[in-house]
Length: 432
Image (tube, rainbow, N blue to C red; front, side, top):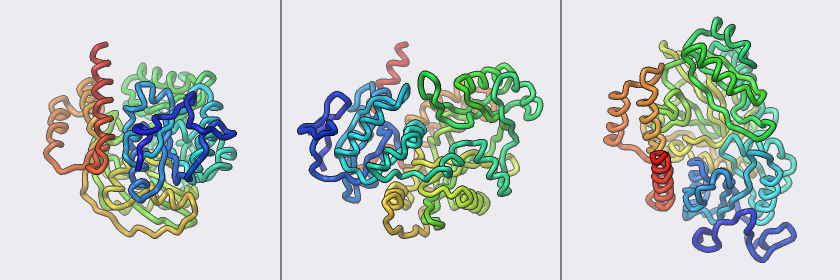
């Protein structure tokens, strides 16, 4: 299939295809099956490859803010299965221009399904859902299921009523409440935003959790995470194994189940998994995940994350109701979640997936390099391995069989684009 980077080029808000129709885009010759947002993310590349390998027509879109370093460096755009690449105005400060451009692209491509991979575009789609659904099927659960999954306070409240393990924690809305939170939860602790994407007065921002070990760190973390008006969860710090269960659920049926554990994450405290392994679904969190998803009626794809304590008891961390960064290991293990999600979104009959391969490893090399560097810089912090152990773990991972994110022998340009971009960004940081 032709790649737009070699033919028509990347389309941005100022340069659209010819001939143009009334909406400002070219006259469509053939409808696309899917438009994948957040092209700069790994899971978006996985989705494009998944659908493209099945002979489907797929386009991808990224924003100017994320792609300012050059659209040609975005791995998804380099994929042989990405038939057209679009660069939209940023939605960070205000979403009107992004929404207008997205509507134009949907009109031109006729995409049957819209897939999103980030908290930012998820927030935009939720805000303008009624308008977007006039053009396409959105591969996301309906409200209020999304609200229950995205709002951690609400998620944990529902989970607690179902009898799931939830971390000890309190809601903190300002620094004046930090002293009492420390007295109740203790230190070290984890400060989490109630929602990971927050619309502020000036711009939208993605918030991440922070480990705090002293009162000063706690005050600073709460101040940073609440300055836009949001609230935080002040939770106990758990150091056990991090596991996740992924599900494809619809109309009362779980069509696919998958489990993995993360050996290393970036940041080291717990973020994106950079070294992960497919595992047999643990009976405890497998049952708990399904009960929670059914209770919320969270249809479509979801990833339910847990952290175990030293005794092995699982505690719910959060639910991810969109394509997750770690989804490629599920695809390589035999569960094609992007395709199943597409089928669910358009209402096609879905054949349940009964099993998958376990024991396989996947590694995100760029993230693992960054994680190792962060471990060296944060040595001595709770949950962070010693410098010697961090280096040994990083190097020894090259000697075990593993798949690597971006690497597909039938589609090698994305990994080359990712490598060049990482090298370029690293050199710029070193020069500073």
